[in-house]
Image (cartoon, rainbow, N blue to C red; front, top):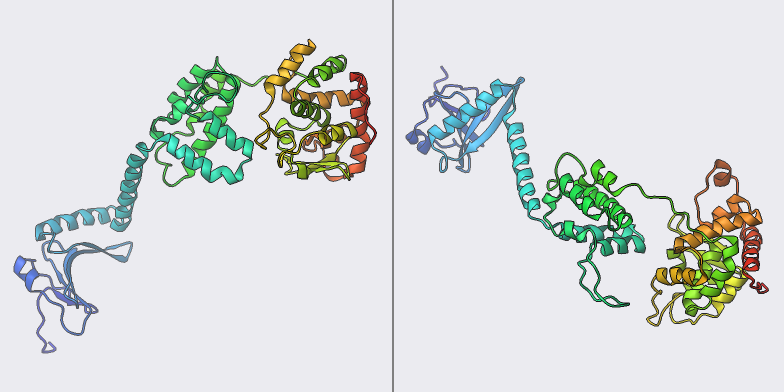
Length: 437
């Protein structure tokens, strides 16, 4: 004996005393931390893993202490103000049962916390409107999209009911609107399948585009911290095989102008509004995409060095020759703003789909769409026996072979040599004299 008196069941930090006492209200109330130590423990004899801890500041709490895999683990249960001794013993027995099964109570508590948080997020996400999430998605992704792609998202989700800018009647709601007006959590694969069945006979091409946009939207939601719990766990609802089969596969378009149709087509188009006529002829004679020509700015036209800078959706931009006839068309247009093909509002004119079809009807030829005019350029160029790589570079197609990709660097003059020949041949078939360069 060292002559010092020790309180049974008391252990200060750093001491090896392991005597235990039965915790009672009086002992819990009167237990205090001795001077000179940071904390002390009063261990229970009824539940060996339970102890009362008191700090030098006087804070008291029940703690559970045990060994797991030869390492000491300690878990705070709670303070005497909120936990009775019996409740603390029950909790300590529960934690001891976990340790006996090889489970760390701290990891189990973290797992339960994450599960509770996920359930909270799931309940919150279940009440979120899909339309509100769609608006956030469009705003966040807009910088990564082209202007046309962004407008597609807005158009396919529009509410409808607005007066048409041209003609009578109102604009119909976008095909995605009926889905987006629902809670996000209700957009299951079955819901998308039923939506596809309703739109399969109306406008399958637009519905297929809407389904692709919806699939990308769901993928974004799955990766988003706030919305990933709202969708079902089995996968992307828009990637349902049934929905794809219902809408069918897109059919390859074949509309294009034939050599013998050029004369009546040019005659009908040149009778249209001058801006629309110039746009349609430029589309045919450059082979560019309809949207690329529509967004052409005056800063992209170089009359001195005879070039056009096309804002390419594939390569970013490409420079093609400004051929003599196209140059004469553009030179006669009014400069009302930054865009070449602009209306009175100085904005680009609306895509003249109806005017293009009306011109074909007046010419007595099968309908040719705006993209069909781009297809016509590539088809008609074969009459001049132009190398395929030349046509692909003018039209903005990706190189189709290693040699084209890595071993062909064609200057603008070489492109102009062939492009002028293509234009001259098309105008010859149409009975139009090509102006001098």
